Image (tube, rainbow over all chains, first blue to last red):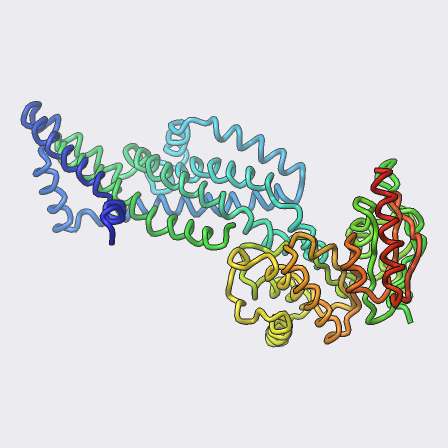
Amino acid sequence: MKQKELIEKFHIPTFIVVVVIIILWGLASLKVGRYLLPAPSSVLFGLVKIIATGIIWKHVFSTLFRVILGFIFAVIVSLILILLAYKWKNAKIIIKDFNSILNSFSVFVWIVLALIWFGITDVAAIFTTLMITLPILLSNLLEGLEHIDKRFLEVGSIYKFTKFDEFRNIILPSLFPSFIGGMRAGFGLGLKISVVAEMFGVTTGIGYILNYSREILATDMVFVWAIILILIMMLIDKLIFETLTKKVKKWQY
Amino acid sequence: MAILEVKNLKKEFENLKVIDNISFSVEKGEFLILFGPNGCGKTTLLKLIAGLIEPTSGDVLLHGENLKKKLNHLHKIGFVFQEDRLFPWETVYENLNVISEHFFSNEKERQVIIKKYLNLVGLWNFKDYYPNKLSGGMRQKVALARALAIEPEFILLDEPFEALDVYSREKLQEETLKIWKETNKTMILVTHNIDEALKMGQKIILLSGRPSKVIKIFTDLSKKDEIKKELKNTIYKYEQIR
């Protein structure tokens, strides 16, 4: 392998910058004190500790359970709505208008409403994730629907496709590339928002434990959970969304 | 006996007359050419025959029965477009399968049919490829196999060789002729290419510029030079008017 390829494959420049940041972080920690900025070593120690004791799994799984469930609901609802928008022009107008309204809703309004309606339960975080990711998914699907290649629909007409066949065999695959983009952005935002919702509403999850760490002045643990959050997002992006993107690239011209 | 009859067909788009009182018939197993200058409405005529658009007046009869009244008439028609129009998200096999499954519910029967036609166009070994990995000529061959995979009574070909380079075009013309002879399917080819019309057709219907009318029907294609001259003159005449 050539040197240039090695540098690209292992992200050497990023790795060097990260090392420099950790050194500067260590020095800054000595200067400002451990409460404001814990040392990298104590963050690493905290990380090892929660992995060794198993605490990490309880909170990670709680958060993932809520985000994934809320996200799956959003995917199902958005697909049903796009089917309606495809089938009826009036439904498309209504869905487009309501999507604009949903897009302008503040995240915190949904969090507060979820707490009022569902109390301190998992449902509150699931509902918030659903309401935040739904307009992102819908916007991408509606945009994709505008750009369906009419020539493929003509093929469907020639070979007697029903509306459902057309949706399954032409519309959905045509929308898939833009849907992946929406899912990627939606899941990322959903995870971040769900963590915020957990700070207010539940007694497990990364959001809850982040807030709890702040309350007991364990800033090093705030850093640990923040790093875990980043790692989860990167892992899911790599394992799921990058795989889906590769699948699409396989057939795209 | 005529498999297909086109009777006094007219088509207007708002106030634009495109097809003006066209009548002709196609015999079973015939290779018919619809020849006319660019923009004369050949594709519109083909879409009318396929039932993709409704005529303003006139009829298309299949075995003497009006196509509009035949609920399943599309069952019998295969269509190859100017561009391949293969679904890019499906493999070659699946491109044939998604169309074929509307007409053959038995999966094993479908597999046999798909294999037969992919073998016929010489692309069975490429069944798991996505269309983006194939050349333009190969994609057009898959499109032809797709049209055949519903076992249609006749196939409509809308200038399918137009977008190909000279070499691929000639090769595909020959292969289409070979398939026509082997399958004995009725084929209707739309073209404005004189050599192609003379090479492929058994019967040529010469159409005027828009609004399209039948100028002449050539059934005896033995005097190729004379026909060539007549086709050329028609093209020149209407190109100048345009």
